[in-house]
Image 1 (spheres, rainbow, N blue to C red):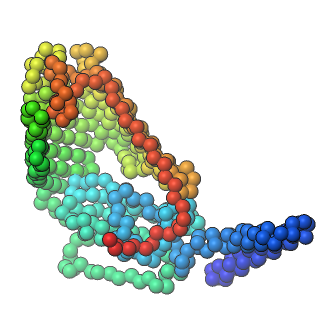
Image 2 (cartoon, rainbow, N blue to C red):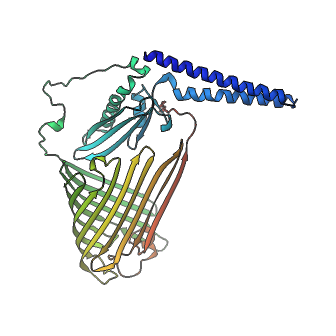
Image 3 (cartoon, helix red, strand yellow):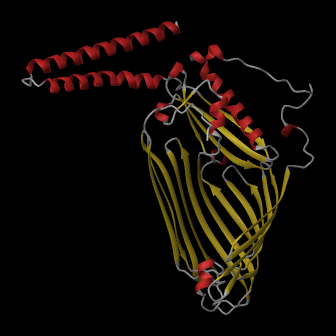
Length: 455
C-alpha cells in the first residue's frame, strides 16, 4: 500500500509539472503570436529564457530529492569531527541548510565528573514530522580523540536507524551485535563499583621557549586538577602556576618583563532542587601584572535557574549572587596608599541563553561593588546573538562593555611606556569594550557528503 501511495505521489507530481509546462508554453505561443518583433536574436533569447524557466523547477526538485532518495540530515554540532562522521555514516545525505533537511540532528556536550556527556537530539522534518528521539553518549576522560569520535558516530548511526525504515536505505542496512567478552560483564561502567568514588585527577606540565636576535621569552605552565561530580554534588579543584619571562633589547637599554602568576581555585556546589543550587568558591592567587602578592578569598554563592537544569543545553536563565570577603597583600603600595587590606565584595548576575535550530542568543549582565565604598564598582554587559535570517543567510553579533571603577590593586605612580607596550603592568581605565559583527551567506549545492582529504 505504501509503495502504491508513493507511486501515486510521483505520478501526481509528474502530471502537475506537465500541466505547468503546457500552460507556460501556451503563454509563450500567445506572446509570439502578438509580438511584432521580427528580430531573430530577440525571438531566440525569448525561447531560451522560457526553456530555462520551465527547467528550473525540475532542477530544484531533483536536487531537493537528493541522490538515491536518501534522507537529508542537517548536523548542528559545535564539537564534532564532521569529516569523520560523513565518511563513516554514508546512508544519509548531509545538507548545508536545515531547510533542505528531513532530519535535524543537534548535538550538545557538557563535562561530567569523568569525561564528557553528549546529548543527541533527533528531530524529524517532513516526512518524519512525528518522530523525535534523544540519545545520550558518555565519553570517559581517558578516551582518546579517536575513541571519542568512534563512540559518538556509533550513537549517531543508531539514532538514525528508526528514520531509515521509511526510506530506500533500509534495503542496504543490517544490524550487528558485538557481545561483551565476559558474559557477566556489566553493561555500563557506571553501574559497577567505582574505586575512585567519582574523583577524576589531571596533572599537566607544558613549557615554551622562543627568541630572536633582540628578544627572548620563556614560559612554564604547571597544573593540577581534581573533580568529582554526582547528581547532588559538584566539587572542582585546580592549582596552576605560570612563569612568563620576557626580555627585549631596545636601542639604549634592555627591558625585562615578569608576568608570573599562580592560583588555587575551588568550588563546592550542592543541588537543592531542579532549579536552585548553593555553592562555596575559594581562591588563593598572586599576579605580578595586577600587583597582587597574595589574594585569599572565599565566596558563598546562590544560583537559581528559571528553567529546569535538565533543559540546560537548550535554554537557561540563571540568576546568581556572590558575597566575597578577601585578604589582599600587594607588591607595591596602591593608589589608595594600601600595602595590604581586608575587603568584602558582592556580585549580582543574570544570564539568558537559548540554543535552538534558528541560532543562539546569549546575554549576560553582572554588577559588583565593595561594601566599604559602593563607588568602587564594576558593571559588565556581554551580549551574543547568532541568528539565521533566511535560508543560507545568518548574522552574528557579539560584544562586551564594562565600566571599571574597582581597580583597587593598581600601584601608585605612573606606568612607563615600555610597561604599557609589553603588558608588564595593568593600566588604569574607567571602561573597555569590544564589538564583533559577522554576516554569512551560503548558496549552491545543498549537499556536503564528499570528503576529500588531499592537501
